Length: 398
Image (cartoon, rainbow, N blue to C red; front, top):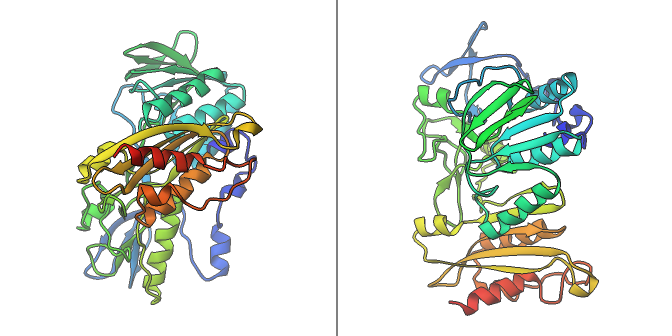
């Protein structure tokens, strides 16, 4: 959606996987602008506002997640918004053009906040990012987040660190002003991009078990705690294959897989969703930013004894020119097992995290990762890839 707002994708229809009309062609009825008010699990009924109830044999919760917005004054002012779905994106893009926006304040420097910073900057809008931590993308190691900060600043983004927003008011030189612990920042529009929370109010109301993450608890078939009710997507949990714990990671690829697994099981073709390793990525101007597995804090909480290192290298053979990449690995000190990885750098960075995700999926240790058979050619890597060098270096420290 940030790429639609930034005009990289100009036709919103390309972001629609399937229209209600296309669903109907295959015999699936879609009711839009329709609110479910309750579920009677004893009778197998879905209660709908302004419509007759629907009978069900099986029910799937795919209620997704909503943007988390802190409880501060001024959220109801015009042009204070959040971005969670296509409707939000269409409205924000139209409003930016309508008011001829020149300045936007983004509160939060996670995935959406950073992607929106790039999108808005590329359309000529001056961006200020307000973030509660010293560096953006706080899941990444400070050495790697520092690269992101440099990239933001080199493209003119004003990054306000260690700042908490307390109120949004009408501004003096612009329509809106965000007051923070680090000063006041004005803009034509304010985007709240702090994070998301799973939508589970309806699930709670009918007694579905909610996991420790605050999302709907499911098993490996996507079945909930109530018979014949399934859940998929951002509203439910996934099993993390590294930590061996249930997590909630709201990403579209996970949602797609869970939805297919739920459908297969309801349709009588059993299939398990074997979990996730937490692979994720985003682009920030000229940088690829990606991570997978556990951070050292998460590893310790899961009972491991984490050891880490950060290795610097190139995404191509050095003789071909500088293409910087920083790669952090997390491993278990007692077994040498790989537990996680983070990377920031030039083109090719996400591919390396993909390779390490496969290593995590299969429980590989540092010795195995250090001698992986990776495709080599000078335009793409050195003979010893940064993955090899990082794994071998960390292995020597254990």
